[in-house]
Image (cartoon, rainbow, N blue to C red; front, side):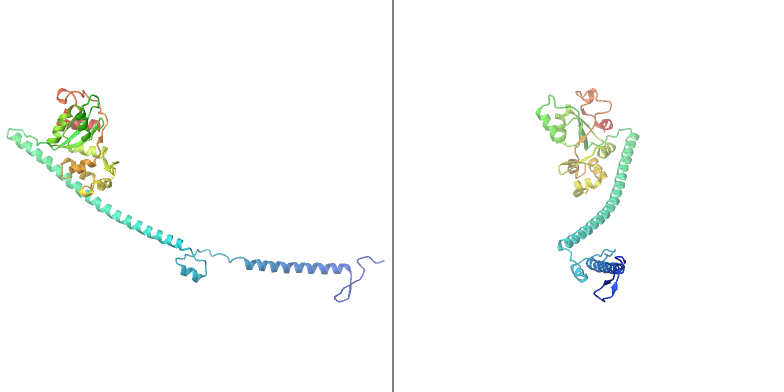
Amino acid sequence: MPGFQDLPVYGRENGIGMNVSTVKKNLSAQSIAAIQRKKKIISSYFHSLSPPPPDKRKPSFHSLQQFQEMGETPVPESVLKKQKRSEEWALAKKQELESAKKKNAENRKLIYNRANLYAKEYAEQDKELIRLKREARLKGGFYVDPEAKLLFIIRIRGINAMPPQTKKILQLLRLRQIFNGVFLKVNKATVNMLHRVEPYVTYGYPNLKSVRELIYKRGYGKLDKQRIALTDNSVIEQGLGKHGIICAEDLVHEIMTVGPHFKEANNFLWPFQLKAPLGGLKKKRNHYVEGGDAGNRENFINELIRRMN
């Protein structure tokens, strides 16, 4: 008796009898071909939907017209304005830096020439002083130094038992704290003020070395009512540039020689805050000529400045 697989099957297409195994083979081949055709159709469909591969080089567009020519989405106008503004700012900053660099080079050359000029002036003054002293000694006389034009005042006492008038004068002299120091021009008004506050201060005639060390080591300037350290010549130029004082040597020269702009230069300098003198004070309630510390000590003020600077 024949099995199930050997039974004839009559197809509708050709009417030829086929067994079951042949039908299964034909069906499996047709299904595989159909699946492959569907895969090709689906892959081609998704391939058409996917965007083209991006270009590795990023295009740089600078105008709306270029975007339109390339058929791309235009950049917002605000982005283009910001880009243009940034370029303008960068160019302006570059020009400013170049001009500042050029100006600094010119200032350095000018400062160097001025420093050499001042050094020659100080050397000539020293030579002239030595010559005058030698002439006086040869003639059997004594050379008397000219009257000093510059004073340096240091406050050495506090406010205990201080009369109101004395307190007011110290405020006018900008000596508000102990061991504060200021430069002062010698004239009748300042001498009268110093006589009234003599028990509370000590003063004398500073030399070039003392003036330079004070300004370089403890110098502070006043800019917009603020205390600014003199760490750069630009600070001095900003405060006193309109008076022709652009560097520390100009300031030292103006103070030392009591020049025409001494008032402006001295007001620009913040009162010097000195430290307690090395070795201490002897007796600040007594006058210097009595073995104390108060009052006029003339040229010996330089020794005190060395101990307090």
